[in-house]
Image (cartoon, rainbow, N blue to C red; front, side, top):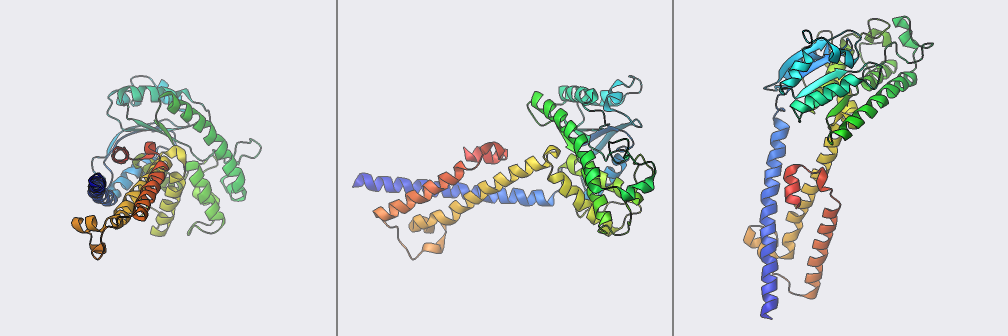
Length: 375
């Protein structure tokens, strides 16, 4: 009998100890989440390379960063070559090449590239190797742009900007899909080789196709034709697509939504800004190769873990009313601990169910702090 009493006391003490730990853990996590929601992300050091479908991005991202109140952001440098493949930036003579020396310092956090239609591109591979050698935490971004002349087929390519108004959205998307999938294959190979996510894609082309569909459907105020988004047949763009591309790049660079920000862009209304920001975030955050979707999965798993912890806090005190009162939980002050086989069965069922739900959580997808608590 004394041994039974000792076991009950031991179980109650363990319950109390776990309860206190979870209370402290939950409060700390809630405070951390609240701080994350209020504080802007930490500033990053960014270097841009690319062609004319990308090199307007740096100046616009700078404005977005200012609007977001991000401190410590640094534009390390830019290197633009019209119509370039990435390997042309790699092959640029030493006296003119600014990208290689920047990576060699190890002081670049994010390095951007803009792919040409030629894929795979050895320049992407070479910059990845060099960058990770000097900064193992470097992230390399490749912009997947809208398709030059709209589509791949030479027979269907536009010859005049006005021809864009009769292009089918499905054909535009098919061209972007083909280009993007080739880049995904190269990115996957590089990430597998380095055993980490190092190369990410910015799906600007997909966002532009969605914007054109909105224009066709009359859902983008102030723009009544697809051709109004562009300046020439090849596909150089006006302010709306420039803003959209910048929002997409900002979202991937900082893994954060641009929604609600008020950057100073000429020729774009507040209503248009709001639509472009939402479109950029929806496109990027749902695309796995942007890196944001994988973070969202991790966040979902963290939410499940915290929900499980909160369930323990809310429900376990009822198993020991006396212990709950001692801890300051007065929901059960009118009850005493039940000592019976039925009570032990309820306790066993509760903890077995809790452990079963815990088994459904993949610790590899938890934030580091939650991984420690999971153990």
